[in-house]
Length: 503
Ligand code: SF4
Ligand code: SF4
Ligand code: FES
Image 1: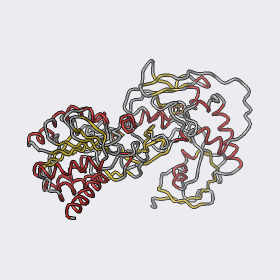
Image 2: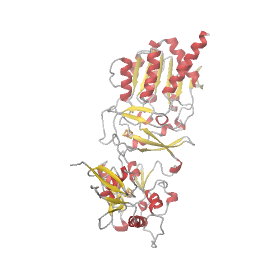
Image 3: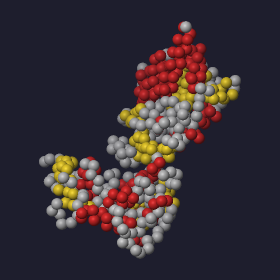
Image 4: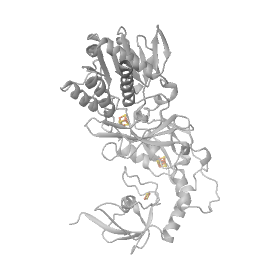
């Protein structure tokens, strides 16, 4: 028996796996069918009755989300009857929906607005006043619910039942009094709250962190990988490049790793990228005082320190927050070219690395433990156990330390405390994006680094899968470098210095 079916959708032959619905097939064939309650990551509810299509031979219109595609079926999404059904579907959804688009956070990415422009545009026949319902209900640490805007599609209820399995939401009351809510005074407290904002097709659920911060049409999106843990969820970072400001993170569909979701911790991985938290320019401690210097000067001073101390007195302290490409460049220059052999990992002293919450979040709060491990195996010629080695590094009494610092502050709150251990080493060069690094005594120089959203490359996640940071924003601080760029600059300075010396 064939395990695919072929049918006709708007005169187009479409072949899909057996068991697929017309809605799934239409998505694959890039035919738009207006819908509210259907979501590819949730079960079918069939409650909005908006996805009507015409099936040749059927007595009435059918809903595409719950209609299995069968061999030879002839389906149309553009007949006058279908268009009329969409118009009336919208009219019913808008009966009690407030017309507060100008102040609604969802404006610009709202299902109601989009479909009204696409298939609506009619004069409403509704003359009775709208039913008023609770607005701006505090439903959790990250959530606000405006029950008037809700169209009762039940996506949020299904998310709570099927994904987090917390079942915190329900539809209470009946008819035009029906509202979404939690049981009693309960709040939604889990680590996946903002997926409710993502699945809500209108502006009923909004994010406390993002609401009223920015109009979505001013934002640019870039595809990246969340640096919050070793799962490596695919994400879209949203920022305003004209303001060099990052605003929010959303999940990007990736069937192999994160599906349609991401956790709330992951959404907090951009705050540190904004200018107020960044090391804007290179700094050096000169005669005991911190001074802003050209990056070339800080790198030249590091190069001289290594030359004076010797490669055997130099140590590299490396966190697992950088890309595979950055490790390649870093180790190639310092180990293969300069001959440094002392290489140490820098990570949390205590971590529940193998823990997993059953959905996405893992206990290893580094995005590229596997990538760093592979790079270290190459330079050391053996597999290294995963552990924090800052104390071992200090115990070897190096004269120079080059440190690739952890990037995301909430996954490395131990950062400043750990740095205190390096006091007493003659030359410590921190490569970091974090301004707080300059508040630690005993450091010689600071080189400003790009954040994860400002570079391309890849991480290896907990199972060694390649997670690609596909697109990069210009850095929020003009002088920030990737490790690859910093190493290239350092190598170029060394070449110029050698050439000048031989003239
Ligand atoms: S709050 Fe949003 S997701 Fe939940 S039922 Fe209402 S419209 Fe649907
Ligand atoms: S599970 Fe990990 S990688 Fe995914 S969003 Fe959360 S912190 Fe980021
Ligand atoms: S999307 Fe089909 S009934 Fe709602």
